[in-house]
Length: 506
Image (cartoon, rainbow, N blue to C red; front, side, top):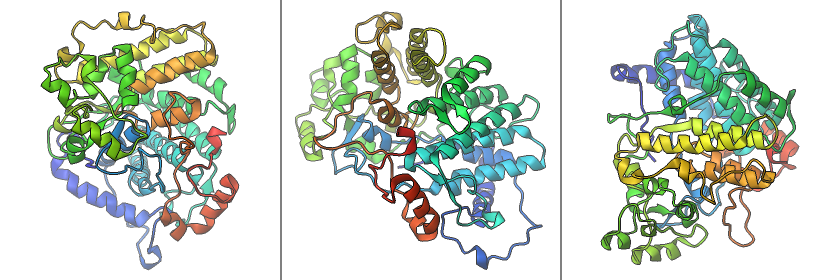
């Protein structure tokens, strides 16, 4: 899978130099859990190389905002037909800790360089990226190196594992610190997300605090935080995203190393198709967003059906064998992924947290009684924001949305929301519509929502269960074995398997 993400305008000639230096520094500062020969390196501690934090911000941002296609299989949105995909059949094994040496190490370096020039904004944004990466790592495996991570320069090459609760509590505190640090005085250069707008970074930071808290909905407390109380405090007093212009998203450009992640991906053009489970939500609701995700079946195209004819779309069954689904291709009765995902070099922005997702988070918190107000209002806002996103960023939106009225859509039986409905009915409506917004967006959020709420109700093979986590990487067994085994015993009784349930789901 190609990782061609955007970078800041005007930095093309400098990229190779700063990136090589950044990665070189990464090798010297090794964090953790990675094979290291630091004992063979004699570096003068008073001669540490420096780099302008703006270059590191560009690199860290474009690395973090990648599109993750694997979740599309796990979340029953896409299927493969050229072999058994481990994500589609929920048979994954090891996680990767590569993010420690790429995202986290360079984020820490950015923060260190920012301290030298007394720029609080790079430090604040660094705290956001640290929180984002550790949140992602912990949801994948459970306990992980956190408090001692990225401290290879201080001699810590085998960091201890912190509990999942300690990680989640710690990153909430880091985000609170980030909110307090971000300001409109210190410049933010090299910013390919918000073009130096500190106010938008502040909104994203606080919105992400709410995302973490709603993810922990099965818990009452995390560290010293009471989850519902902390959520209400942030939602009631801090700036949050208010439109799709505030989306924590990366826009792509038709230039080398700046194109959409899946652009020219051969698999997308040949063997990747839509899952019937996903597209049936749209067909049942007569929801035209379907047309932006999927292509017509070959049979429908040959029959001359209109793009907006819902009967022109059909998916494969994600729990059947890939050979069974391949027969649908032979019968010309299965939809490919819309070709814009691999033919359009700019396509749509890639978000790690959007305004639409935030409104769904607020709707869920309201339904749960964490905050006052109308869950319906937030739910309706979330759906409107999703349609606004696609009508804004999909090329030639008129061919998909002509004559569509979102307000009328919100009154249809399968969509209309009632604040008076039982909690589970409200949650099902919220999470289902939230799921419908996440095709190639928000990375693994839809799968984690399913694990914590049971919605939507993914199809599984009889007797099979959905994995709760990934196994730890083999590199950890090789180079940080003692700390890993201690963490495994504390969490899972020593069992490192994908069906071991981590703290956040207990």
